[in-house]
Length: 452
Ligand SMILES: *[C@@H]1O[C@H](CO)[C@@H](O)[C@H](O)[C@H]1NC(C)=O
Image 1 (cartoon, rainbow, N blue to C red):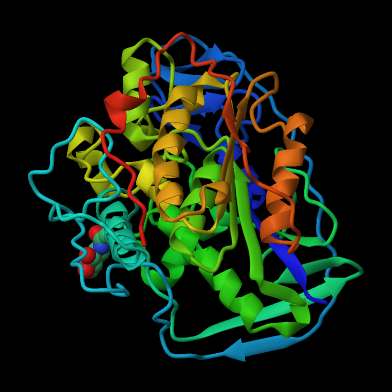
Image 2 (image 1 turned 135 degrees about the horizontal axis):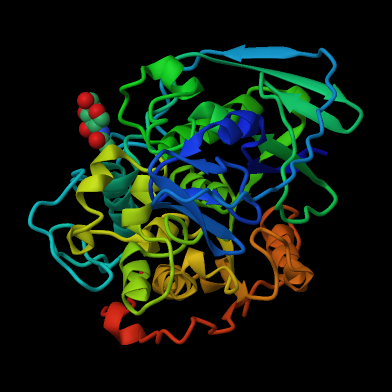
């Protein structure tokens, strides 16, 4: 029997480089679970904001050191089979405005757009209503194009040639040239599911806002390619799936693939699940702003006094999103999408995200509001139970609270293991938003249709 698998974004291989680099102004420089730079560029002081987040703030005092340990476990390998395929460029690859179902146009940007509320999933760019499931496929393609145009950069299709090697030793396997180490902060994976650790930082570095254009992706496409780290990572996930499809020795059922990651890697996992439709189950863990939180809502949370990550901070901290996104971080109302529509791109496939109200930096209200808005698309498609969300406190950033394991296992059972466990009512929050009020009608100003 072929195994289901889960691809976990984890950047352990780049840890040594990350520790040497210095964080930019406003960048993260410490905190629990932080494996990146511990020092700031000159003229900045590494300042503890909370136990989970230290930030480079302008100033000249000696920085308080923070520590975190990193356990690495090399994966043993033995030589095995090689498989090579050279198919024509795939049209099923969901990246880019070029592979568009239906007839709607898919511009990268919409000039003059302005909307303080969350953009309506059920209106096309030109304002006409989305009425059928076929319409939704077209609308989804529009959203994919907008997210690339404004925020994520372009996502190239499969290249004309791709080769993969699978090596196995006991129950441990290595796909292609990926050196897999394990990193803290991961979800428990049930038996019967192979775990594949993807060193996404090797694909596109994420040391700081100035590490743009560095990594394996840019070795192939050139350092000035307009893919961001996010789309480069997604492209890599798609190539892993291509490789699994062309490598029977790996014994992986490519109909049963999940993707996960925590924090920055959770943002990447969501982006992968949104754009790559071969992923059956998407599990972002504490992805926050830039993940399952909405840009507009994180800004609102900040305006109400919460110390949360926002678009303006993110573009200074790292190169995750495209350079063009810098033009919009102070004009969020101009975005004709928000991350509720990134989440909605996963529909009707399985999606459960997990958030942590004790890590306020990731903007807990924003995540709740954003997933609530995204859920309307799952409802419209008649599959609300394919969308889960759990938000609790009482644990450190990227530490797994065992109380949530039953919810996680229900989604694994339904989407990876072919079981019949119910995933209904796995959509909840503890409503701990630091006193910031969530008023649904202020943000979600559309009626949810039934798409036939
Ligand atoms: C990326 O660059 C290519 C070529 O210059 C261009 O056609 C495409 O629209 C750009 N994509 C994005 C998302 O900006």
